[in-house]
Length: 236
Image 1 (cartoon, rainbow, N blue to C red):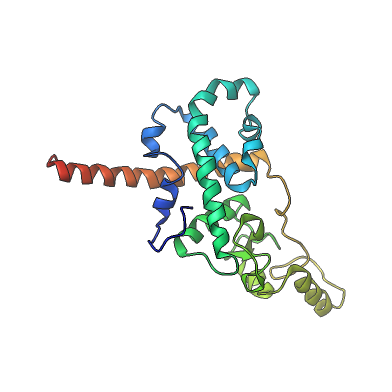
Image 2 (image 1 turned 120 degrees about the vertical axis):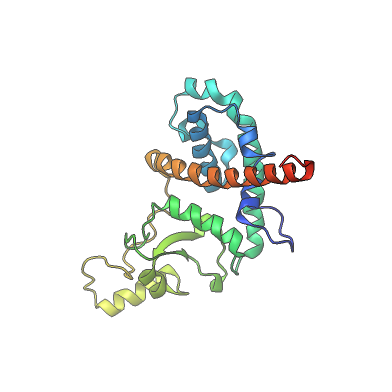
């Protein structure tokens, strides 16, 4: 995310600032598999605290020799993305204890849903999904990825502004020790994604969806810029 300013930042502008110039222009020489690898690595940057220490071949499911063959093409753009995404994640700490603006929340929400496989981290439901702050904003929680999980509507409403331990205590007490099978709104499971390493197979599935999403952003952005240039030069 760019530095917090009074100017409204749209999702497209936020994504555009992850790169130098226009994405399609900068990756014009990328082969299809290099786009895919780049997306997997980019998502890893979003979800990792210290991406510079990452094994980039392993992140993308590549052999060392395969990564060496494409490193010269991908790494310059990835290095810039690491810096910009790092700045973005630092900037959202200014919103600790309060909600992110809609544009920034849209980006964060999309990544959390992708990471969690579009299912509730508490009960596994895939219906009526929200994003829950594990430590609520009202209790001083942050908008960082390690404090956010996908939650179904019933679980999200049931937990409310409670901490996980408080929510569990209330649920256990109300059930009188006989919890039965897990159900939406139950507090039997802590978020299954917290503190875990994401599986490579999940990253491949996520990468393909992220690629389509960002490709649509940049296609629209490129068309708009081309149209503006043509209007200014009288070639439209």
